[in-house]
Image (cartoon, rainbow, N blue to C red; front, side, top):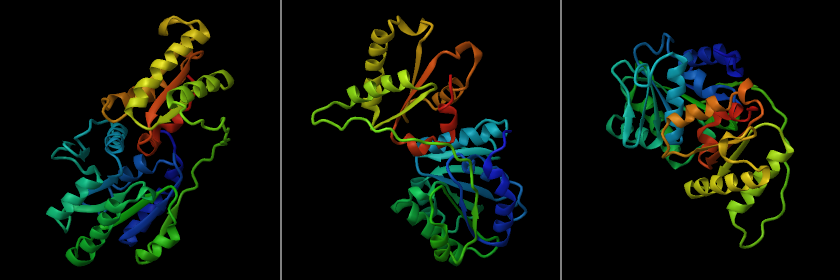
Length: 310
């Protein structure tokens, strides 16, 4: 298991949760909040045989997080780690960590306001808060104060950009645990202004070609929706064939284009992650990944992989 920045503050987080019922965790993207924290709490004495519920803002994020957590344990989803999303669930009798979406948690709170059998609710990516997540937090606070005595229901709010001190006052001066994370240099390059009537497909493909020609490494692209994600790769392949005189993906300098949106099979996440790792056989290839805008918050845990050189 590789070392992540969040590992340094896990002892402090365990101590805080042992002493208090509400805790706030601040850590930048890539620190390892989603994949490390639930597993670190599994054997805590205060948890006992209760479950951990982790709230994710998107269905894709919930499934991806459950897959990653299960893989860290060397298991399949549905054993120690499972998930529940709209119209789909994968849990088993031994499941101790359930990754759920906001709607699922809201319905569970309606059916079981006390959340019996749940030791801690983790609000992941709370900086993406909306009405549903705020309602869920309010109901969880009410459940702990009015319906739960022993064992108490603990609440953990995790975020990359949260105003911890301000929220701490709302949550009874909850302790704030902070992870510094890793910082990488980022530069912004502005393109030409948008012209009225200009199609997004043409602008995106032209920008991608420029990036491929000017920079080494992979290119990560976010588009508004599935329609654009389907159209852009077609246009991009055509322009690449013209630009580099290639004939399909078998040419030496081929561009690997991978797409991702929710309706694709969840296995595509694994394919994307694995294909983005550098190997000697494809060192000269350039990788291109095209995602929906929802993936901006759904797949943060693989960004560092997607940006690696193929």
